[in-house]
Length: 359
Image 1: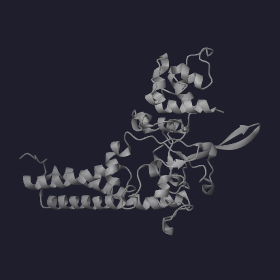
Image 2: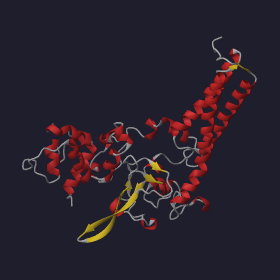
Image 3: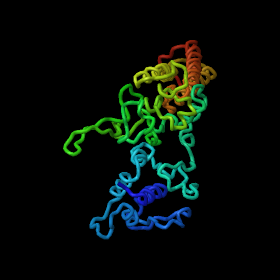
Image 4: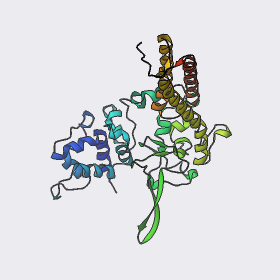
């Protein structure tokens, strides 16, 4: 069990960023921010970190590798670190301090195990296409990205499969980001372990095919987490225990959510495939269809407009979940561009040899 001093030091360590410890492999001191100058203890370099965990660096014969130091930090700080560093964000070099501004934590606020430092940037600064699509939503306009992608969830050791009992333990902001749109794959899976000679079941975070944690549909859409301000602002979201929405928008299980999600996604996916197929077909027809330059330019302009919409839908990646009505309208426009392009092609004549577009 970590004592209070150790917990506080590890919180400081989280603010400094885990990359600092990795860089301190050769006992290079970790800089202490101004906000910590008056603290009666400090953590500098690998030795300071090990001492905070009750490990005497002088008595320890081995030299810890960067990976071992990171594992020590993850095991002794909290689940958010492990979640984040398993995500695609970390793969692309995004660390804690890429988004969180630890310099804005004033006074003794940094001592809290759970804190909410100001953000240097948020999701929409990097995910620009998704942000542009989401601003057109007419169903979740009062919420932001974290409402669904970073819900408050229980620690695995506190998890219960009974959502009615989840409210008091769903307190930790998940840093998994990815939503798994599955009817039955859940964020937590049971494992049988032996404790004092007896087999007991405990829960751990599930992994996808790439070894990454994920948020399941229940925790994304219908979690019983009244302590989550996004749930409060969202009228209790879709949870049967907290929702203030009309009855048809309250979901009792993950399969029900999956069914509702498919109603949004399936038309967008099929429309997207239709546009991609049509643009490919028209480009091939242009090679064997005689048109004057104005006709050819008009066809290509329509194809470009349809392609831009298809690219936007693909880059957004939500297939309608971010803004179903908006994407439906954009798909309708793309389909109209395709019809206009095909109409012009139909007026052309067939060429047995490839057409030179420059003549």
